Amino acid sequence: MLTHTSPSGSSRGLNRVIGPLGVTLVLIVAVIGTYSCRESADGTLSASNQNSSSSVQAAAPKGPAASCDNPYYPSESAAVLNYKITNRGTTLPSLTYTERRSNSIFGSFTDHREFSDGLKTDAQWSCTPDGLVSSEYAIPAVIRLNTAYKFDSVRAARPAIPVADKWIPGYEWTTLYQVSGSQIEGGPQSVGKVSGTIEVKSQIMSSEKVTVPAGSYDCLLVDSTVRAPLRIEASSGAFRPTLMSIRISAWYAKGVGLVRAAYSGDIGTGAEELTSIK
Image (cartoon, rainbow, N blue to C red; front, side, top):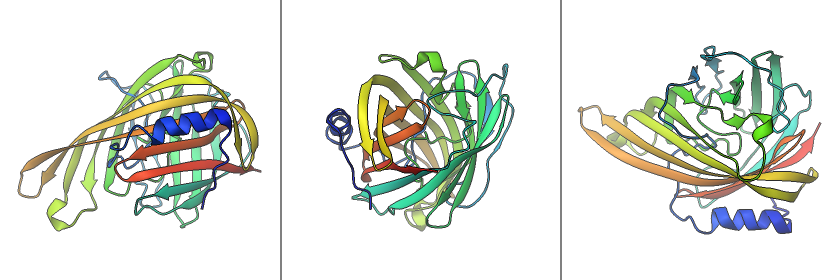
């Protein structure tokens, strides 16, 4: 459903993500999450189930609020961004979706997404001096991969999108999502309560020219590694651990946001691209 137009620079990043990793996620089957670190959270956030049309309710972050103005994830733009998602080697569907920002005030804003299969989601962002903190455990680069688990609560530590002056090649950051919920796939014997952490380590790699259906953009490439050691508790009280991971490359353009992303993992590979801006 998605045809990639890979410029010379972006194809290198895609090969780096889809090639070396053959064993990444099964998890998160949801992604785009963000970073790692076992510290007190910047805020306690509650994420909407990506398998139902509910909205996100987020508590105010601990610490001072800040301006939401970030050129690599614009919050005050009235533009509607249109994307295509293509999944390969997985039962996950290929989809299109629209994304727009709303309710932008000092200290917070909302991401509203409407998918071609009818799902609508709202994710709350909190704006801090260190960057943008997401109420979802999935990073903006890879959406709708959470088919195996339903997370009812998410506690985020550190921003998913760093403050604007940190967007230079070589900058690294980590964040941690503490999650709890239930397993919703895998048969009756696998149903159970799920808890654990989703850790994402990210680094800005380079400046690259990227061409997608929406046009050509000067982007910064962000490579992320997502690691999720989870614990599943069966109805009998027995526990079993599971470890899931994924690799992601995401290209962000100044004044636009996400332009292109690619991931690889145990569930297969996939990508999404910006198709138009209205």
